Image (cartoon, rainbow, N blue to C red):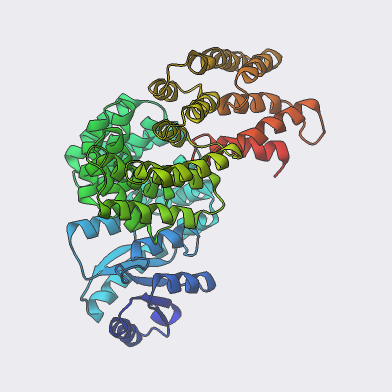
Length: 534
């Protein structure tokens, strides 16, 4: 039986009557340590100062405040909650959308109001029994030691094979964290052969996709969606596959279904907005981005890209007939948030000004010109790299605003940084036919590919020569610079000053101007730690 008198509880709800009612129930069960909070922000402060064994978190905490889902995200990412703790999501609403949205973030349980003391006690007892049984695994998770997690799973299964099913997901996550992909694939296949589980389908699909096995991933998702049509993560995976297959309209349809099932996921809404913009479905794009902005206001996943995306969608939607007063107001409000909340980010400041200038082009040409001049001045002194998507949009807007020379310069810079990416070069080709811009990347990309091939043979001097030649042609190219840095670090003693080490550090300093959203950023960080000893 649960030793209530030894456990600490936190009740989070914006209604004082509910907090008092649940506290009374817990007192009657023998709980002595009960704290309460009326907001998510207060709950996070309290969890940063004290560890709770049980958290009863209401989902809705009032307009303009963090909801329960966002509190759980923060608790997990900031590591303010132990894996041994029990987190119960509480809500009076039981709609499909609400339940699926809450469960996507995997609280320990979902509790629907109203409930009585007996029902609460039964739920708490079952959850505590499970946590106690899995204690060695949960403690290893708290330490961030996947090998310990795996060993704890093995030990528990030896103690009693009946516990095997409880350990499956922990085993899979541990293998994933250790990059044991072959063993992970075998485990997923064993699980699915025995009993199809939705999370195993998601994991196997992601594993195939990560390996570049797009067709295999698609087959997994298709099979899984027939068995589990209510699983939003499966639709996310299928949409990723379809994007790689250049079926962006199909990907949008799939993601729209995921949003219909679980509409409260900020990043999913933003991804839908991005896909809809690609498909020039500006109505869907503006709706999705509007949801991402609204839902993200109190979320750690708040992203200025959603605000910029919303403004862009609204401008594009009204390009034929002009913007009405209400739309112009929404655009101004949306962009003002970006400018106000990101004063130290020159890229966002530039993009917000150009976006606003574009929206004013037909209604207020004088103000549009002033904003464009301000953006161009900032652009001249900017060192950080924009993402290719942002750079291409800036170039296009500059062209629309009559700044052809600045637009061409932006495209040239984008080709130099991302010229090894054929998708980026295809997008650049849609905005210019300048052979100097379009052909500059071909020779450098070929040298880079040859350098990678030679590097794999172990011929470091030749590989470095090829990478250097490629960098001479495109000195800002991220991929080439990373390859150069890696080749220079190979076999180099980083504790002793050398020409190779200095050249490597120079490459990494340049690459450090890349956006942290770039898929290559983790690789850069690993090389940086090795080169600089940070």
